[in-house]
Image 1 (cartoon, rainbow, N blue to C red):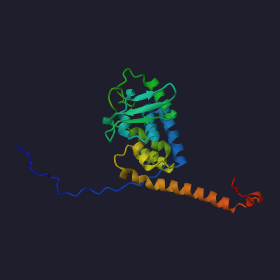
Image 2: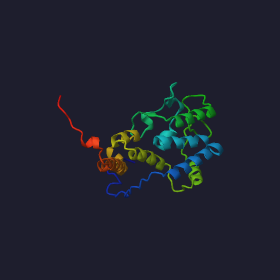
Image 3: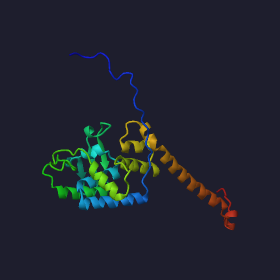
Image 4: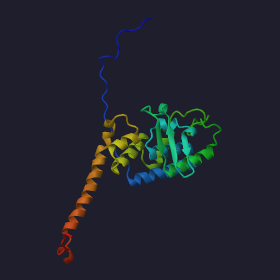
Length: 231
């Protein structure tokens, strides 16, 4: 036995990676998905449904959600709530403080009341047999949810894409989008640039139409005779 001196993989071409089209969900698809998640909470896996909503409304990665523990969530008396991600749990290996909308904060509170964790280090979406053990994945629960929603080809990671796309569509600067998404490289965020461009074009079009309408509107006699005087 001994150490080899040459990497046996050297010279082997990598399989090409093809970028998957990023398409935001339509309003009807969002409604169908939320109905399916309601059903999953009532009749299936409550914790998994909340995990999916956490991805849907924060753009988190599945791994980040599965690593989330009760101690990572922070609730304030004024209604503010935060998810404090550890550097060891994020892809970019940096801590992240994520503000939570009331809808998601309330969901997590209800999940806490149902789970009644005896230790703050327990996972919010743990193994079904032990709250101190991280769940491996959510594949079976996601297949059930997307089938109920009639979205059989929707990947769980597409919820993250949908969230990030929605920020760009609303005109959030790409640099900010990248920080929210936890991208290490702005080139990753550039995949969403066409959504930002479309938002800018829409705003420009609205502004242009407003100015065009103002120019076309006939002036009043008082406006036509308006003069400025030096005092």
